[in-house]
Image (cartoon, rainbow, N blue to C red; front, side, top):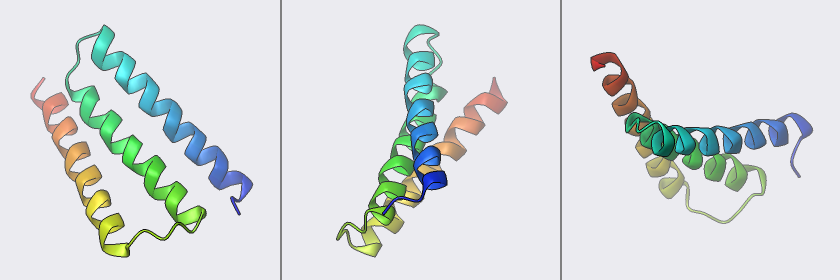
Length: 81
């Protein structure tokens, strides 16, 4: 069962996905696609853990790694300006 605070966290992550996609599309900021991917993976990862979905741990770890690389790439793009 979702704990109330965890549910709020997942909802906020979903809002971040929407806002970063809007930023990518409307403001033409390509780094925002990476952040959208990162937070979309967080939504899936956190939901899968909380709902105890039968997803192999290795798959979740791989997804989390992709999210980390995506966030790092976005920050590199922001840094490079």
